[in-house]
Length: 406
Image (cartoon, rainbow, N blue to C red; front, side, top):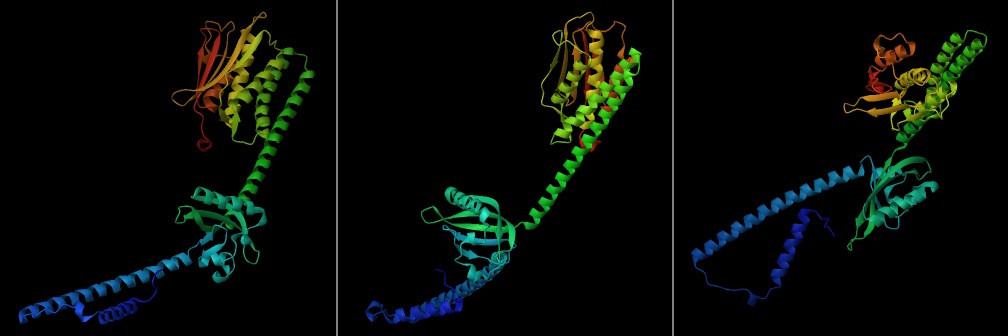
């Protein structure tokens, strides 16, 4: 056990013990030797030097002892008044030691706190969490962190984070835990408010997407009603193209309304729905014209997804209209992939009759191609390439921009 007596008292005790030991020695044990005066003076000089050395060593020991006492007091204050509650908890869960902050946190004086089970201050519903935490630290002879609900001595609740480390005994097995308890009530309250605010915004965004989708569907219904009163088939065909374009945007908002992520659109699901709608609206016989979509885990922002959807709408419509005349069989393929430079490449192709040899899509007066080119260059900030060596293949390359770039 450490000696708590002051340094001066301990040196005085040592002196008394030494004198007592000297008195207890028998004279026979003391050697008597006749010494000359010179030898006697030399011996006295040596004894005086040793005495001064001992006094200097004693002074150094006293100085070190004072420094130790000062350090002990300083670190005792740091321990007691740390912003975190520190506890030593026995294997059985009994509080053995606590700093003043810990006692204040639990609303009880330190002396009364010692010997009480820590579970006395833990919410009943979270006691299983604490027991599991306690066992994990003891079993692994390591450390573990958990968050639980606690209460002080007057049953006032608060949220706490417990971080415990095992204290091994002489045999190496853990016999105690050193546990730091931090009051995280303010943080928890802020987290709950943020979660509630986030939930409110998610509901609001869902409602926005739902209303946009409904408004677009109203527009589609109005166009369809108008088309029923128009006898000119060419005008109706043009109106139906507008309906297909609106439908491609409706699908995005419908997908986002059903999604938990309002920033990104799963491109595979989106493309599938656009293509299926177009095949149905054009009355395509899927036994003759098939659709192949390359599966890639790619998500696009809302703006990019709408632009890509409108481009696909125009290019597939052109393929269905011109690539397979006279019941010709074939395939339309849509693929997405990343290039080495980080750009995205969207490929829309068919193995149909191809384009006329003198066709220049850059100067084309076809509305669908003009729309696709404008969307690729101005909305996506990309470029369009045409490969007509076998069928028709449009390649749209663009850099997907983050929300911060907008």
